[in-house]
Image 1 (cartoon, rainbow, N blue to C red):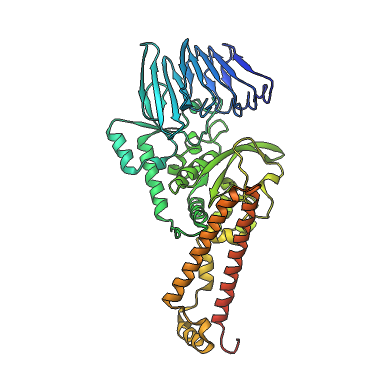
Image 2: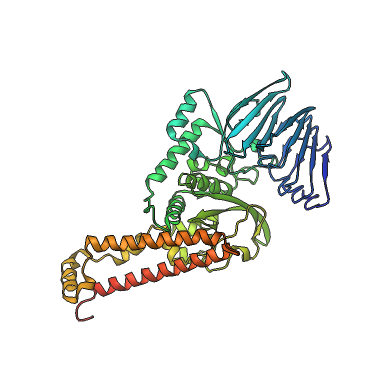
Length: 476
């Protein structure tokens, strides 16, 4: 399936009419490839067939019945397209986003280089007609059009209901870029195509999850970590792993967003659910495909990378879900907001092989910090809360010891808040400066690590102070 992978001298590919399927990575890494020609009976072209082929300028499609949305998605280097003898050129101020074909109907989606706005050129070869629609559209198997969106965060529940009332029955969610090959399910070409009725239910579930999340202060430097921690914690308590049921493959609906309705999923489904919920808070989640060791052989797997508070982390919800749901995080040796909890970086995790979408990741947060993020501080707060009956004596002890243990006045609290804000602004300014320096990313990580160390020391000092406060005069 990877016969032509990394053929860096290959400049032109002509797929003959007898070829029906082109699988992932068949032509990946062909950095010199400039022209692709597809012919005849081709009915499945993988999203990843031409991954890392960034020099392709020309595409020719002859007699092919179906080209799916993801086949050439974001192949922005393509400028000239010929479909069944009809030529289309991408304007200089536009870049190609998607090419679709269903029978005699074609949809070419472009995106403005200036403002990012989408436009879809809809062509009917049989009637020799064409029109432009200022939206990103998906072309279904039966030649109908519907909206294509990055995530469900693009629409509110009310907007979904309005779309339904207008007569639209389906939506395509392209952001996950997942796909199912024909030997897994015949529905694979439409893997990300959903009925609006189902999405209205999914959106309701997401809104319910959002109602359980306690939002940190907007100035909290760990804000996104604390939000994401609550998301995975809630999902770990409700979602189950889907055992293989259909021809040794998980049910199709448990490999995408619909798993949220069934409360079942596998790695693909978990990532898509996480990605769409995180998008509600503008948190980026991206899928990674690769192989992991299992029972003496390597098995296909997907996990994700998540960008939290400006830093990318590896995250494998599938494999730490059980530990999280049973509060056994100390026993977990899987990716969780960074790397394995025993400190081994994912890039060094023996047996894991990454095939796509890899970002440089930040240093693994300490396990104590992860526990804090995953419970939004509840564990730590409960451990330091004084008992109700001790409150009176505790107050008198503080009065006897001196001013340093007395509650701070509102003015003192405001001074502390102003000082903290000042330092956050200084660190953010420093952060921007570091980005423009040589080896900026490395220095940026060093600063982030320093901040984490300072935060940890601050928490330790606070815990020690509270312990002293709770001691009797004799113990002091």
